[in-house]
Length: 515
Image (cartoon, rainbow, N blue to C red; front, side, top):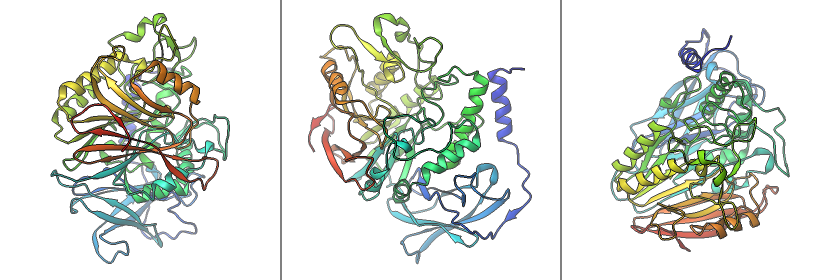
């Protein structure tokens, strides 16, 4: 017998609160293989601390390889890499119901400085990670962050992360598609080795495969991260409770619950983000002194279903605007009503010099039809134009200083002026958008992105032929964005170079070439 979505959510939420009966506690286990096979990570820094993460997984691709018992795990934070000056330590429990993942929420540290950390479980000590606290809310001279997205494991080596780990950064923001549930693409250099995941065990193994990459581990160990998801952490093009394949909502929500739980188990997220069944709030605000505020969004969990889909399918398509009047329905939302209101309030409350809206996809309008008429891709903001207009009005009316938007998803380096009316060349610029291409995922050809620029003059730059990541260097008077691109993702030793640089001046919306 089928059940309603409300009943499913009630049951799933109840299950999340059940205490699993694991009577054994292995305080001092002995490991025949390295239990820290997935590395260490940190995230969500503030003035007094951060979140530390690891997972005990001596057999990472076979369910983890841990016994059905809890394990006591110690952690240490030191002022020096040799751990002569340990400033904080504690103990957490790695529980089997959470895949023996470990998260420690460290507090009471000094603001604005770097620390080192490690874990101990039984006879095994983890690699050392480095992280930092944020400055106090006072003037800060500079910060540098990287933003990245879209790392299809099969399509390339994570050389971009090897180079990122050597950069001089304060923070990394990941904008979604951390894993891919499906296999696709023209060239593969390695394989998933398993079918598309649907269950919790299958999603856990998919995360373990991705996190086993040493270059990804290095970037996690070098800096604190903020993260948000896009679609492939669950299924391509899903929208709220609708799957691309129009699966029964009950079945799809069970899958979403498994995917969200595995995401939580493998990211350095604070405990307040722990999922309850298929629900998990990850949108949040973070900061860096008086210099920057980061408004991190979730554009998958609460969105309206895409309009005008292909017959018998969910998900996205490219539609002619004249043939799809539903596209302009003001009731459509990408963020959901509650998140829209939260963002409005977050921007209005910000006193930071730079306000970075970290979200998944391309916000600028992209008319994809050369010449007369317009057509739009319905999975991104172009599928929700009224919601985009509301967001940009919120940005403009909030008084938040120097709004910047960063995104991923479209596998293209993008620079765009975000305008109050994209169809009016004289409309004022509200904010500047930077898209950071992809770590490995294959992108559109140069002919296609050239069409984007030809038809959409507010798109100042577009290149889908290169893989890599973006860097923002923020200072009181200017923001400099640099696109860092690797040579060939099929070469694990490929070099990195700067493809292009752009500058936004304090108090002047819009972007200038160079920097």
